Length: 294
Image (cartoon, rainbow, N blue to C red; front, top):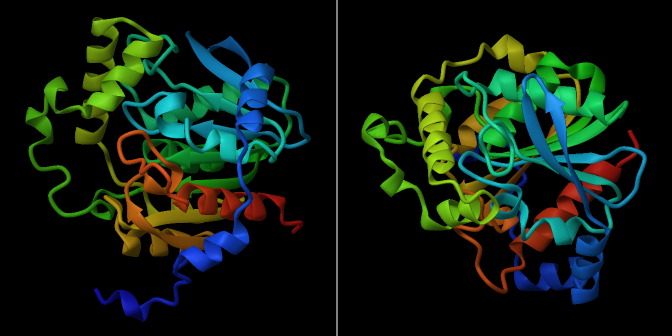
């Protein structure tokens, strides 16, 4: 399919625009975020969900990491760039990082229900939600299953059908082992949860979820009523065409196609390039979308 047939705004983030858009992030801001951070565990649906809270604000932004990840590995480089948004709540899902497991497989639907239960536990009325990769698919499920708590969503590299991933993605998945897991993700898990058994369990559950992933109906995506921003990279594992299709099915949504690979727009630990301004530009797009009054 010819991508030029789509009417897409592709953000060409050249150095001149980045210079005009960006504001320097000081070490002081990063330190202040860490000092003001509070953390806790929420008893939700039979697990203890770990979460971190930063800042203050009326409509919190919830961050949902990708598969095999923790708060730090997905959002360690993005969080400081969002320091002036307001209140941010970052979570870790079932079997990931510091959150406990349950004797059930992982599903995107269950993750969505767990995050919704956390929102209720924290006595929040409305939230914005940002999810990356598997966390983006979970974000879609929250908007579908729990629309009453959702204000806006940002879905980065999300998918709702198997053909939304690049050709060959599922090949060999059944034979994948922990050895195939990127070293920064393994280290990220063990840094916050020094359990080799826990790491193996998380890997197997993430793997099986993708092996058994079933397509969602288009009608489910059309059910999303929250204002949405869809972000995908031009060399992502999620196709641009798939992201365009989702953006067209969600009324009033926005779309950004950014340079890079899966996760580079947020500085994900496996692909972060030191000195890159792309995550900073992404953070500006996110904050502008969330702060728009409509």
